[in-house]
Amino acid sequence: MKKLARIGVLTGGGDCPGLNAVIRVVTKTAINKLGLEVLGIEDGFLGLIRNRMHPLTIPDVSNILHLGGTILGTSNKANPAHFATGKDADGKPVFEDVTDRVLEHVHEREIDALICIGGDGTMSGAANLVRHGIPCIGVPKTIDNDLMHTDLTFGFSTAVQTATECIDRIRTTAASHHRVMIVELMGRNAGWLTMSAGLASGADVILIPEIPYDLDSICQTCEGRSKRGKRYTIIAVSEGARPHGGQQVVSKVVHDSPDPIRLGGVAKVLAEEIAARSGLECRATNLGHVQRGGTPIAFDRVLATRFGHQAIQMLAMSDGINKLAVIEEGRLGMAPIEEVADQQRLMQADDPLIATARALDTCLGD
Image 1 (tube, helix red, strand yellow):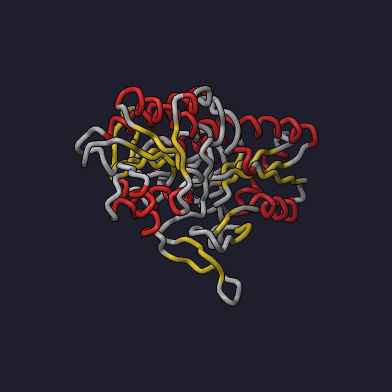
Image 2: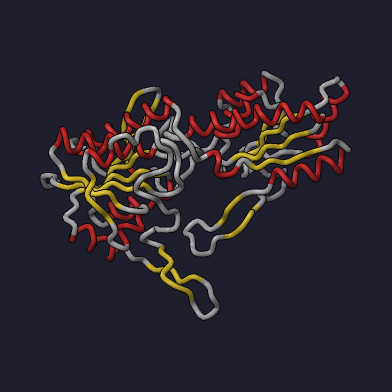
């Protein structure tokens, strides 16, 4: 790489707590320690496509550590290699590869390297730019905790805390009305968030995408609790959970997105099925985007700051370019961005969290 003078930083995909902590440390360290100029790229890769970016200074990133969301904005539809540029005669989106446009804007702005903060979709976009000669450093963000090669992503722990508090609140009304309360959590095809929040809140049933569920097993658990005098049941279910031999519940299809399938609605389906089969009163609650919002907890502020600092250090390493900052067994490291792109780290059958849930006699639906 040539000597660095200016870097760009972007936040891609869904928002999550801790993004501003990364922007803060990246900007301050780049300016104070390396003497670099920093450009904030607006709305993720959309800012690169449409040439929307602005200088970031120390005052710009002061007092943002505690803020949720991202001061730069984000987009989960702007993949330069597969970008919706319009619609055809039938009203369907037309996708084009606009990578050349991005390269033109990067060179026009004299950006020497990009810090890309995001999940597997963002790393897919970064991997595309790497293949076109743009140096990139990745920082792992997602409440789903499903990136390959890293034990943790920032934002996950805050989402677990938020979901746990919500389930705790639902428990009191479940006990008061003697109901089966089904709480739907995010996570796409990975069960990390639901399993962690379910264990933390003492959920009686935890349903994750990696373990297809059997409705009879769930009903037996609910009915058995009722017969033993436990007059309510808490079910934590991932949006990606599905029955044996069945399909995931899709809430909608966003046709102009590179990842068009939006999961959601499994809690409502389960509530209707359990009520019909068992006769128990059921209610469904979908926590939705509340899991992604709000102030990051202290752990995520520190983790995000560590990741951001690692990203800047990687800029100066001969083997640090085009890598993702990761943490494994408590130690910071790095992994090739191309090995993370478009992949998901799913829970395995022998995961200690699953073993712990089984030891507690928690029903996992199987």
